Structure formats: C-alpha cells, structure tokens
Length: 271
Length: 130
Image 1 (cartoon, one colour):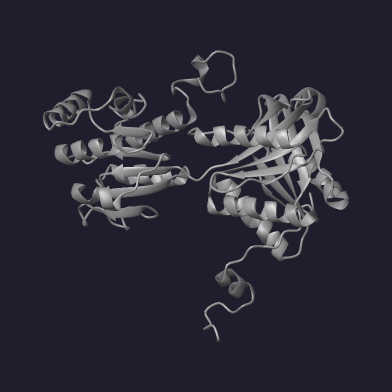
Image 2: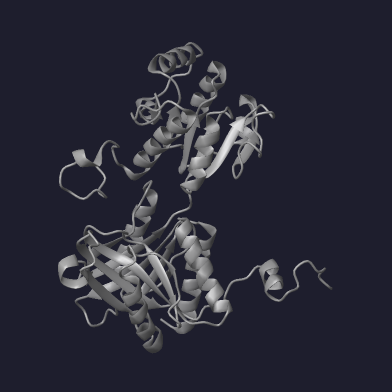
C-alpha cells in the first residue's frame, strides 16, 4: 500500500481511538505465503467503509466479515485469529478492537446513586443520571455525570438508550421505578439492574401487567433484580461496589464469585 | 478504552513535535500475564514511553526493539517467554508467553481542530481575523 494511503488509514484509526468510536484495526502478523506481507493493515470502522489491504481480496473479505461479527457482540476482545484462505494458505491476523466507553444510566438521583456514579466514572463508564427532581439531580452531587432532568412522560423524547447502555433503576419510588423498568426493558439496553428485594420486583411486574404491560421472556432475562453480587454489602458505597461488580461481570460474560473456586483454566476466560 | 484514547493523544503530540514513534501492541498471550491482547505502548526515538504492556518488565527491551523498528521502518513480532527462573529471575510471578507486535507509525498528518491549531500557535483566545 502506498505511503499516502497508509497515512490516511492510520489517521482514521487514530480518530476512532481519540473519539471513542467502535473500530477494528486488523494486522497481518504471520503468513505461510511469501506474497502476503506481515505488517499489512486493514481498518474496519463500525460506521463507514473499510480501508487498507491485507494483500489478498478474499482475505480482506474474510477479515472484514470477522471484524463485523466481533463488533456486533457486546464486549469483543482484541485477539489474534488464524485465517485460512481458499488457496490453502494460513495466516495469523490480529484484530485490535476499540470500543466506545459503555454508558451507565442511573434512574434515581438519591444518596445511594452518588457512589455508584462516582465509582462508575473511575471504572471508565460514561454516566448519566435521570431524575425529575432538580434538588437531587445536580452537577454538584454528580460531578462528571450527565444529568437529565426529566419525568417519565418525557423520557421517550429526552433519554436515549443504546445497545451499550447499562441501566440501573434506583428511584426508591414504586411508580417511577415501574415506569423506568417499562422504559428500559423496551429499549436496547442489554442490562437492566433494579434495586430492591425480589418481592418488590414481583409487585411492580404485577402492577405493570394490570396496566396491560407484558414482557417477553427475552426482555425479562435482561432484568437483574435484586441487583448486585452477593457480597453482603450494607452501606451505599458497598452496595455500589456490589452493583458495579455485577455490571462488569455481565459485560465480560463472567459469572462473579470467588476466583479461587474456579478450575485451573485462565481467570481471563468468560464462563 | 480510555487507554486507547491516551495512546492516540500521545501519538498526535509526538507527531506535532516532529518526533518519530513506534507502537507496541500485545497480540497474543499464553498462560498468565499482567496485560491482555490489545494493551499498547508508544515509544519515541529517545526511548520515552506512554502506556503499559506488562508489569514493567518488558518495556525496556521493547523500547530497544522499537528504536530498530523506527530506524528501518519494518515491523517486528517479538515473543517473550516469561519464565521467571530462566530469563528474569525477578520473581515476576506471571509465567507465560507474550507476543508483542512492534510497528512503525506512519508519518501522519495530525488531524487538528481549529481550536487545537490555535492553541499550538499561541493564538488561543484571540478573535479570528477575517
């Protein structure tokens, strides 16, 4: 590839890194064919056209397809994959994946939401707090978080939930929680954590059913309630750790629990 | 995620300052290792680094390789066997194999916003003359 096009490819990739947009940079590491040069690059942004060339059109196609499959999953990890070409050549391609930061959207700006937002920011999440009460949902209480002052009637218009948004429902208010569950389970949010005991969750779902709202099995499977990992959390800070530990485990496809109770396989493998 | 942004910023800064850089990326890990695939280290001509690719044991050697990569412009795949007894004797405690891809960064034209360009030229805050 020419120097100019190499530059353009690298610049586009850098822009995605800097702006936190989803993209894959594939690099050819090793090949059994002398025609395929190690170091060749192919850039596949989530939005937009691929750039670059790994040295063979069918290899490019296979890699673009694989990159798109990875970007379609919740939490793709960077890895080196063997790729077989129709002509029998074997190559090793490194898929370097850049993802936008995940968003944690908290419905409820009460005192227990404060450490959740704070710790989540430190973990690298973008955080959003949604609450209709201007006395609670403030920048002073939630530094670094985006604040959306809105009641349930204006969520559709003011609140955007994407497929990389994890939702937490913690209004301490039955009616608002019910509305938030309904809103979140009808959104693309992959995870909807709801604070409170199982009995409260059942009561809310029954009330929603009386209003004529029924959820599919798939929707209910995205609901995590009681929210959090079982660590005996008591204070708001401890509860925040319990919730965020669950969110991280969910994101990575891990189960939570004690690492020492896992078998001898790698601690980095999802279960 | 934030790490990649920091690396991107550091690359742009280096380019702006006219320094050559190489990028080292963890591409394969077998066994235990401190960092996983995708972790990055940026190295400039003087051996200054940004980023983390191990618990601190690989960076000096990778920086040396990176100088060669910058000089001849060809990428290198370097494999590290982290057998603490044999190689390091430092009690690293993470025996495993880590493959690191070290590539030259093409001489990119740094994308700048107008604001950044002004800042760089000391014009920040002045009105744009038309």
